[in-house]
Amino acid sequence: MEKNRCAGGEQPQYGRQAGGAKIADVCSANSCCTASSTARVCPDAARRVEEELTKPAKKAVIACEGSCISGEVARLAANMLAYDRQRDSAIRICLGDASTGDSGMVSLVRRAPEVIALEGCPLRCGMSILKTRLPDLQPTIIDAGKLYSFDRTKYSNVFDLSQEQLEEYAKIVADHAEHTCFLATP
Ligand code: SF4
Image (cartoon, rainbow, N blue to C red):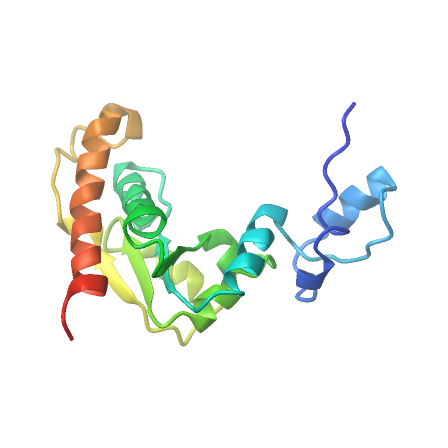
């Protein structure tokens, strides 16, 4: 049987802020290295962070990552904004890692000139989660759910709507966020 991948031995530099014991457990089970780190590191995220830290700071874009249609639209809009339209000025942040992990995403948030949170609904879970680690953060919050409408009494599952429809709503949100945070004159 294939062994789980060892992350602790690959990225020990991000392992100082202890979280869980999972990486150490994997290493111990595999007998693959002597890493004693208890950090929670995603090697893919750590590589991305390492690369970004060699460049000028960018605006940090997060989404609430909710599982419903509103969360999915916020997620798609955040991806459109950071990965496509403003890729030279914005960086997409993994909310989970920035809030609880040790892969370095939090450092991209800390140095960002602006943190932009695309929230699916007024609960604003993205910022509530991130503020558990960065309580003094002052983000620009985009209440994405107010920018488009659909029959919420009828639809909630992301598969209730077509991908094209979800992307159409996400485009509206991305348009608004781009105009507000990147194109508007001060
Ligand atoms: S902000 Fe709303 S849509 Fe997003 S995760 Fe929270 S409850 Fe779900």
